[in-house]
Length: 318
Image (cartoon, rainbow, N blue to C red; front, side, top):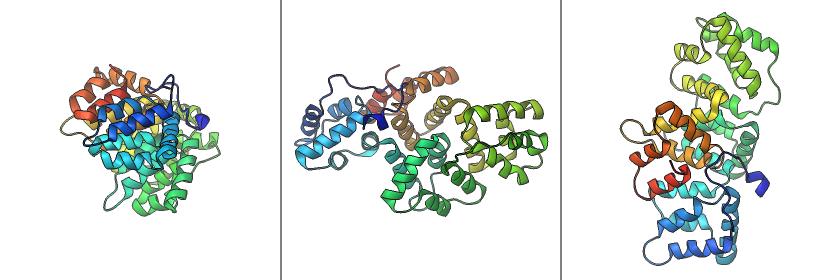
């Protein structure tokens, strides 16, 4: 378990010293005993154990009680706090698959979720998500995405979840970089754009972006904004931003989820849960750099109760 789940070195959540799954199970049982639930004790455990450690707590819980920890917590907790806790108990590809499935459930699609996950995950992460999705939902993720989205937006998403083994050739790179591949001809060149962008080779793409700027005189993001709109613009921008600076991309997602009236809790929760053990330290640094305020202070001002407490623990202080 440890190898597949030790996922990053820039997280705010790190291994708990002197870890004892049985002792944690006892504390969780006590927190759920009798009338009322002790949310503070639950937060103290789940927000301060790594994903690998949480899997061991789930196993120990099953062993000693013959019950599923997630099921028990689900019936004890509610609202956004429950969503965070249950998300933390899942392995990363399981959480991503679960979020994608939810985003496509019922009427309407939460495009932001599809974009956030598919534009930011690595090849290996996409492979794992596809495999789990197929096994658990008995349908391929590609089929569900195709059935739920349409047009060029659908093609980009499908391209992102098709793990590509090759790197696009210098030729594609050159063609794409020529000025006519941008302005005035986007209709025909969205496909070319797609071919280049959805090859997940960061070094190669950064070179393409440089070349594009030299030849067309503007950043690729500016061309996307000028020539596209809606979900298609969002997904292409997300891909470019993730290639340039993934923590900055997530810092922006967090900022936008909290600024103005109301909070987009789904985006806030998903980002905090998914990145806590990977690059939350970098996301916090990018947040401060871009917005002049700490992520901690933003979350504190925008949320309340146990939901606020657990997010602040995942954020790891000012």
